[in-house]
Image 1 (cartoon, rainbow, N blue to C red):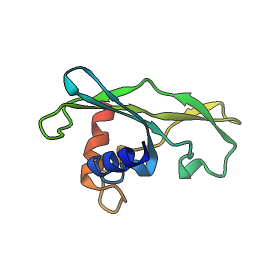
Image 2 (spheres, one colour):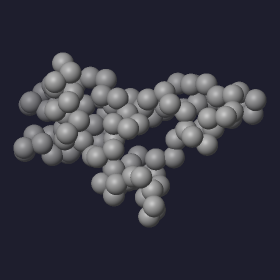
Image 3 (cartoon, rainbow, N blue to C red):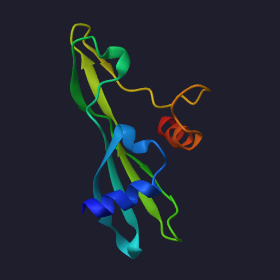
Length: 117
């Protein structure tokens, strides 16, 4: 299965696998492909020095019509959240930044812009 994940990683927006793992690939009706992505358990850098722990996932978000040679592909994305223990505050990584000087490519930033809609 690893060779398939490597192939799929080449089809995804650049930089996506920095924060996400491909957890599965499923074939759906009419030869549609569904790629399941899950955010890695790496806390956001701004909270790294605080007492933080993983606190589950946000509801799954799906993106359809990601083209792959005339086949429909669905990206099923699970974003992670963390708990700042002392503050009892839930936080998540800010993946919507697309300002100059960031490490996100414009393709990657545009992809995540859809997560906030």
